[in-house]
Image (tube, rainbow, N blue to C red; front, side, top):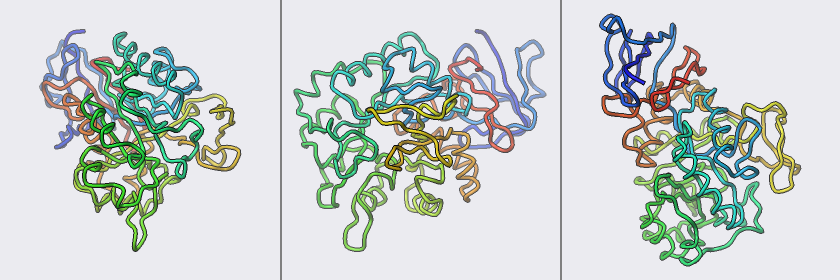
Length: 377
């Protein structure tokens, strides 16, 4: 691909701001950040007026997009469609997310994701298995009939990928310590979610095995005066990150701000939990025989229960900035911190040697372009 550059009035590298600056990359690796005036005259260069260049957004929970649900089409081509739909909203990389399903579908999802990475589908970094190892009491829109507590033999039967990152959301109170150990040994990133655990059930050993908590405040036992529940434990567990949905529907803005104050720096990150309706022409889809549709900008099932979100990363970032989170911190919540959560050591910052990945935003935080592994898309 050769040497190329993009520039804007402002560039945030994940730590510092640069003004009237250009990001230069060669093939798929960042070379430098330079003042626009110092760009070589012969370099291929795209300038974005009144814009901000930030590290590429990374969404760790994407159920679908572009009228495709990953659960309904577990294939590399479906992953490509989903990635394309989310790029329009500033997402450079994502984890296609399989909502609780059968062992056969889990195997297919792991295989399809590995195939997508081998085929160099732009934007896919791995897969998120959200269940079926969850709590029936906190099932949300998941099909509780699929839930079970796996043994090590059950887990060993799955074709765990070698290249794709894997995030597993589980109600860890229903998992043995041995299965948690086994998952950790396979390099799986483990998150507690859809959990009805008491604080006592989240033992120090179990907490030491988990990396994070999935969609904080949603589908987890409540924080009460005499019982911290999963919410209180998540807020109090400093080593663990918390993902959070910032559509203003799933979590009250005041609770987002509270979590941002309580969690250590780098441990609160944005996810969309977006469904097939993002980039959709129909605003409805089917999941486990239920019709899910957008009503008053909410995704709900026939019972009126929330079933994922209808939002992109750019709007999610704009929301938290409007609620009072500093712009630089909001950008890190969408890029740097997800990269750290998944141990993606070459993503999340715009620095020499990192993968050429960036999100270009207008002054009102609408996506203008996305750079993925040196491709401006």
